[in-house]
Length: 455
Ligand code: ADQ
Image 1 (cartoon, helix red, strand yellow):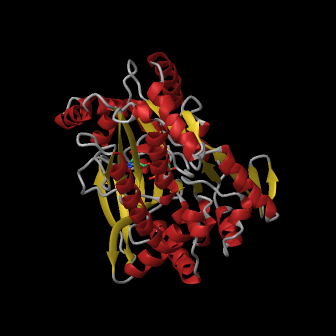
Image 2 (cartoon, protein in one colour):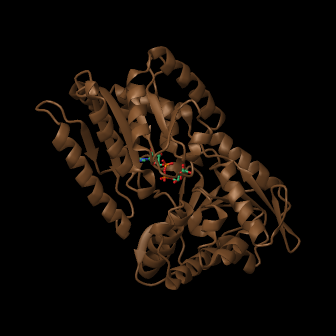
Image 3 (cartoon, protein in one colour):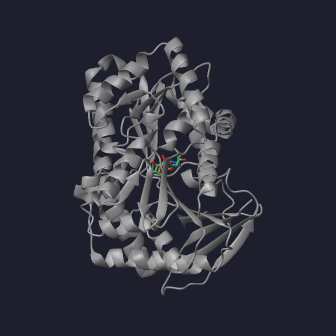
């Protein structure tokens, strides 16, 4: 079997003995068999660009990393990746900022990745590149003469063609993608947008394949998933721990509603807080019966929009608690720090409602983890944004429009009133769906298609 080489912007820190948090490491666990290589940025910043490669091995997997120059970190990572591509691909053009220096650094870093990676690969390796930070890597590898089979998976949405077109280097980026053999997307909508953008640029299409200069690029939909049993075990263990018992005690019989996200404007927190405020004002009979816990892990704090978001949420959280708190009841618990995976799993299991309302999301693993964590005898209710990729797989959740504050308030009330029987019925169906679309299915289907590519 060919060796699998995973490439992503960040590589998990092997020295960090904690659990591998975050979507990618968990989603790829099945593909990372002994012998595999994972290549990317170490997370370290250095003064000057350097091609020095650091390697470490754990469980037979080699982790090879390079450091990023401080300037590249600002222009490639915070700049073009996260201030241009991230908001644009989430279809929020008003938040996009673009400058040529950022794009040039993006190209340079993609070339640096190619140059360093090329020294590590053998002719038969399957190369699987991940996400929007590395749209130009395959093309840079081809320019170095790398003839391997190369696949790409986009974890975030692909924007509607008219929005993609707003990007000054739209044409170049799209051409860069043609250097792959396979590109994978989370949903049919993402693939449709991608093929639409290709079509508008005059690239010839045949079904789900694009043809360019005699090369075929195959596009596929393969949604990422979670390891359902592992997350469930984590949740079962966590509820026995003292932290979970303390939370249950502090609830004094009230229902817990939970949200957990990176603190990111795509995750829809301000409208979610408004919806909770609306719920408390429209359904006063529910006052004191619910406690909402928002766990928000700080993220990309050096990008301006993220600072503004934090201020807005501080204000909204204060307003809700100021208006509705009682001497012995705080309606909203708002934490701006990451929680351990185990703690989060336990909180999901003891909660009555999981509220997942991104304005736009590639997939959203929190929604799937919430389902995996439930007790089938007494499951909680998942309220899910229609604009998360996960909504296409999870129709038995209470689907909402994350811009519609009243609809979200009503969904919270519906979840509070839902009978045990209906909760169980929905849960059985949802559990089945996340088992079908789990992490193993994700990896295997992508790798199977990439292995069969002509190269
Ligand atoms: P993210 O935008 O990071 O991922 P998500 O899919 O929800 O979003 O994954 C986040 C991971 O981090 C989950 O495993 C979750 O448990 C964890 N997490 C979230 N908030 C946390 C908190 N406050 N404390 C601790 N852990 C927390 C991107 C795309 C998604 C896509 C994934 C994987 O934006 O749409 O689903 O990649 O493809």
